[in-house]
Image 1: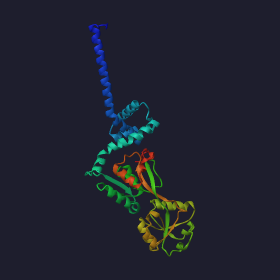
Image 2 (image 1 turned 30 degrees about the horizontal axis):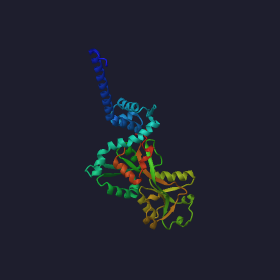
Image 3 (image 1 turned 90 degrees about the vertical axis):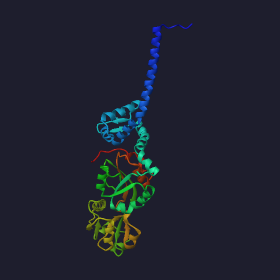
Image 4 (image 1 turned 180 degrees about the vertical axis):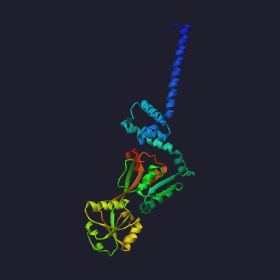
Length: 343
């Protein structure tokens, strides 16, 4: 026979049951609330990882540093593992953090770019904008086919090609006035990522009747008696030529210093000097009016590729352009790591 509870005990039992139900409902609400804030926590984690410090992540997210720190701690507490290791200068990923970052990054980027992706795929009026910084030779010789293919696929995107030198291109990247740059680099700053894709040999060009044109094997010393026509000293080509001659202790003379490959080729064709140019600018028409010799045994190849600021979230328009250059180029981890800003 069941024991009958007295009224006081019965009320206490009911209160206990109600408390358990309320507690369960509270836990469920907390879990639901947490799920609703998971994106904010993941976003904070991704920004911290890409930008290297909580301070820079907070600035990019327009939040206070304590808020970003709390979101990270909540995420680590819920997952039960540390995701980042803090040092005085920056943070680094743990093994668990690496795994989570690979999963979280496309989710965060996808949601942040959702509007532009949607309008691009549905043919909406908001086609987006893409600014690519590049030098004159890159714009003239390397980009035409890429630009044509990009315009055919994404006709609604406003594409701007900023014709700048290498240093000015880096300044545009750091100021977020250019999405990416395409070009060649000798020295890569710590806050910049460079992915070389195209490689061109150095070429000696001269008039067809030039004395060097009759030689089967041209030595570097053979160039000494003849004046060179080179781009300005501030540009990479001049620096490369000077470096090679200096390293080999071979004297040389610059007859004319002038910008623009077309101008240099025209002056060489007129017999005003010889030049060492990058193979990117040599066309079939040039080979008909000039004698061209490969100088790969003396001078290094020039590599051209994608230049971007580390830690920058690339727009769908920029990613689509890079995929035309080489699919999967952005899968490398180095491009996501932030470096010390040189701004």
